[in-house]
Image (tube, rainbow, N blue to C red):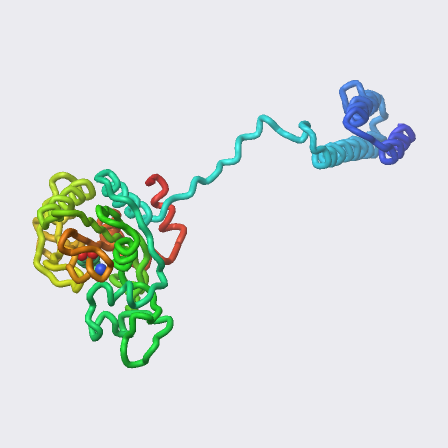
Length: 346
Ligand code: DAH
């Protein structure tokens, strides 16, 4: 018996197996119920009690080594086989992660969608701009404080003392796109311009040196302040719900006259007063006004024939209201734990 085991041991370890058919014969010959190893186990019953321990161990070893060889050959064949046999059709599909949109993109898309429904197109301009498009053509006086190095990131300045239309800088607002659109298109113009803007601010929970704005511009014959108000009311109701109220407060921007800031009734407390609206019941959402005739003229549009309105809003603040995000920095850190929470939103 011992001799039979040893012979089989040698045979199995030397045996060459080529291809799946031979592997199957190997299994049938040695490992199946009617195979040679099973036969030896049959024989084992008749082994005298005193030899059972030694022979039993050898027999188990033989069976294990045949099984190991079989498994090894089988896995090698699966790896090397690029044909259909390597595919396990019963295996569950890979769960592809769908990813999620950034909350700023979600809110930007919402704003775009609302204005698209009333005939606005989308236009974009460069983030690296010149003074002419960001300030001069928008009627900023040469000594206007927004041109100060403390607010604006300059890339190159022609003179250290004075600002110059040729200075290159990072745009501080998307109003620069208004200028590009007016220079390139004839009225009627109805467009919104989403994009990133840059200001030299210390980073905190409430301020960042990069943020996002959407600019709006409407130029045609006989456009009035009433058109501006009605457009913004439509926007506010679509964005914040039909019960939202708006109010326009007089304000000042160099590129609009008259100018206003728009507040909406606080969406958190409904106007009763809470810490988000600082107990006023109102939240400021945008700046707006009638495009200054000097701006129209500087961009080549006849201010006697055409009038228009413009508005500009940040995206971070409405996104904070919508998702109750209390720290601006979360938008820019790209922490996956923050971003994954927006998975279901488009
Ligand atoms: N550009 C302004 C800002 O960054 C926002 C703004 C105000 C845009 C009034 C406009 C406007 O078009 O009419 O604060």
